[in-house]
Image 1: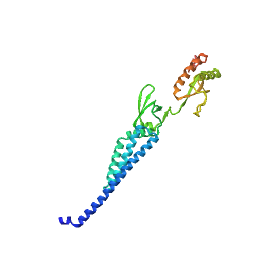
Image 2: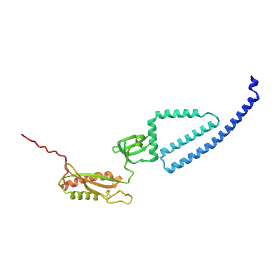
Image 3: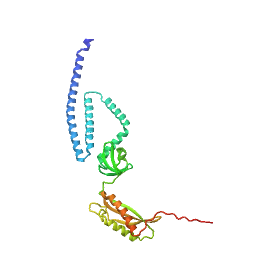
Image 4: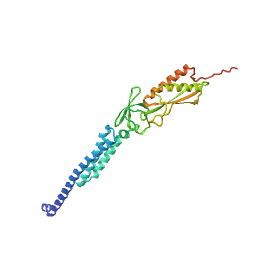
Amino acid sequence: MIEKFFSPETYSMLGQWALSFCKNLLLAIIVYVIGAWLIKWAKKLFTKMLERSKVDHSLFSFLTSIVGVVLWFTLIIIIISILGIETSSFIALFASAGVAIGMALSGTLQNFAGGVMILLFKPFKVGDYIEAQGYVGTVKEIQIFNTIIRTNDAQTIIIPNGGLSTGSMKNYSTEPYRRVDLSFQCAYGSDLDQVKAAIQEIQQRNPAILQGPVADSNVVAAPWIGLSQLGESGVVVSTRSWCKSADYWAVYFYLNETVYQELKERGFMFPFNRMDVKIVTQ
């Protein structure tokens, strides 16, 4: 039995297997060396691409690490395959583990994907004044999973990036100019021309209100005043005033306060809702 086991045929098979294994091992070493160099080169190229696209630094290192992990995993699978080891079981194991982790962290992964989209496409940036998910405030920090904003009354709001990246949002800081739309109601019988002249004078007195088109914008126009509605208690005069985005609230409150004070001083009445009751006696 022992003589059969150590027969020339057995030595020949062992020799062939050893020779084949050595060839595969040498090829695996060569593939590893070349693959490691290619991964290093690919990561440098990917880093330069991120630098050119000005990706946010909080996402920069994370994306580079993800690319490195994927490339190294691919290289290891190739080397295992060259050595003659079955790789389908490894791939199936990693795939099932990935599915289980994905199901357990579905909400977290959604917020992570939203954070990646926000940091890549930049619908808003730190310092922008936005309205989203029922909140209005200034963006203080953009994290991978959440965005932190500060409201006008100094509250800190943490919004998950998943809903923020897929829902509607207003960004008030992307345009350099904004239009202040206001409406004022005057009693029926008021001289409309005098009302419009008084409001126009108020608009011209404030240097923050732009008096005409500007060179760097094709939407800014001169202040506009017009009769917009015949209300239940009076006529509604609407105004449109353009200003820089930073001056929006200053112009908003200036117009409200000044129009009320000056129209009242000039004798114009601001109507209010009233009900006439007629009593019929028999």
